[in-house]
Length: 107
Image 1 (cartoon, rainbow, N blue to C red):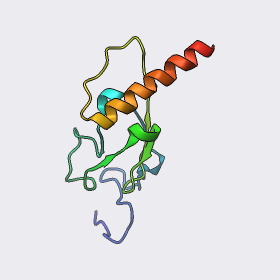
Image 2 (cartoon, one colour):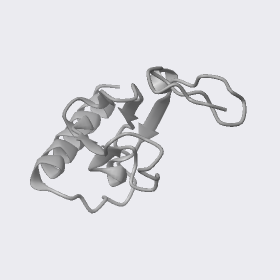
Image 3 (cartoon, rainbow, N blue to C red):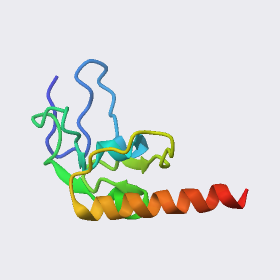
Image 4 (cartoon, helix red, strand yellow):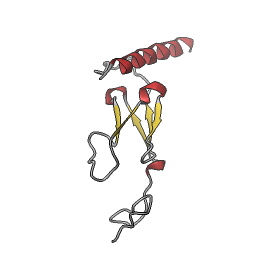
């Protein structure tokens, strides 16, 4: 099958159908941060350039290349705190814990 490079989304090699990541929603945990798209366990040869998405700031991020929407799961107060990669993410994690404690106290 020949792939026309002018097409925005190449067809799947097996089915021939066009697959868009714009409908893809991925949930991630705080332990997965910093978040990259494509994720670190993906091959770069079949995707787009790897970029970092600041999901810790708002709880959601959309990749500007493929359109995948990432949602950050709520903090689990009974879980072991993750090892976080940088101070900004640590501060956002601490604020998320405080926000979750307040939410639970209001119930």
